[in-house]
Image (cartoon, rainbow, N blue to C red; front, side, top):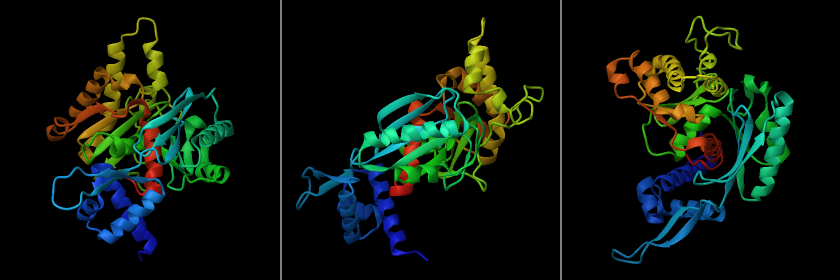
Length: 362
């Protein structure tokens, strides 16, 4: 049974979503577009103004009969989110992000090969530093990590970081005194795309290439994580039966053919043919994605990661591999493109997770 608090949260989410998508708007506009009563809109807007989430922006230019309406919009720098991306192979990236998904402070920290508790200690230090610098107007903290992450912020497994059954959200929340939300890095990139990216298809796959390879699935405009929260874990799909041995024990997993360190190494070899290297990697990725694309009939594949995966050579090879393995009605209209948010998409996605969970902004 829905409680008054459930209704309040739903109303806040509805109004914030409308302002995020269409604002600035007047209170009367909000009532008309959301179907809420003017009294409800006024009460919720008043609370959001008090919380520095929404602000009044002055009156609309006169153009009709009666008193000009006062416009309200999201107060981008009224509140902030501290975010951390721990998916990069050589460094952790921390940031302070505003309510518009803009990175206002960004810092990098040398990982120095840390794994296990040493990596957790570094995460804790970075969060304390950024929380101190951000001041009191924080909504919460968002962490984006490779691996399988439960909704309660427990990292079931993150092999490259040496983490297993790690209750990272609970540990950090207790230490920082703030809400902490942890999300898979590919899911974070997908959330960034649907929350702050250019309006696009309601169904897409966001592929994240870093130390490994993962995918975030967006269906009907909502993130899909699966029954065990491992949807999109494509890194251990076998794409080459006689390929290299993977850390998981199988041979020829996608991660043995496509990853940021691997691409860097192959491109750095003497006499390396950049086009051939990128075409081969893109073909392997497309091979792994073809069944997923065919099963879900998505119209966009978004690539997140190092500049190499955004190149036309890599994207075309992936698209061709998918098209050659799916029906023309699927493959011919598929778009394979880079993230609209560039290098910071995972950080922004971690912020989107916090804003959704704490404010209902999605």
